[in-house]
Length: 164
Image 1: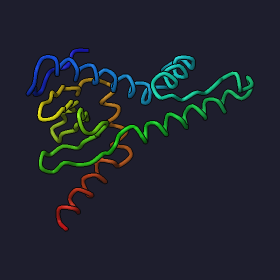
Image 2 (image 1 turned 180 degrees about the vertical axis):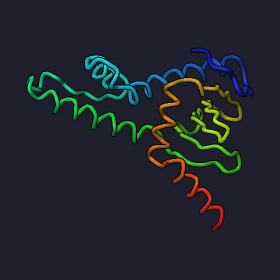
Image 3 (image 1 turned 90 degrees about the horizontal axis):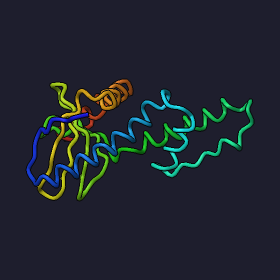
Image 4 (image 1 turned 135 degrees about the vertical axis):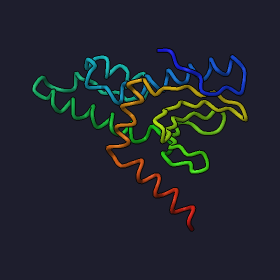
């Protein structure tokens, strides 16, 4: 999928690095948010390769398939809950931030009031942003955050800290 660059204050190399990280994050979220559309073998392999989670299906009897699926879902839910460093509202800039890494480099998914979903890759005073609004993986992440009430909670938290 092609992504439109929303900002670039750095080199073409930075853009390439940002795109590489964007694809990696997208692959992670695709597994976590669309696992129900994937074959069991693929899920188990990706959980091990990307997150170090080893679930050995040979430890389950054929009649325990539901238990195996339940164990996989528990791991996926745990990883999804631990995946971002934080989810907050940045009032000075007017976006919600799903922060995945911090420092140098830092990367995050930004949700703006106008509907834009942006992946930002930042590295010590330089950065690049990509418009990921049309990507179904990022749309699904937004739905999950909306359904869980995360946007409302983050906004209230930010506003309460401003008024103190």
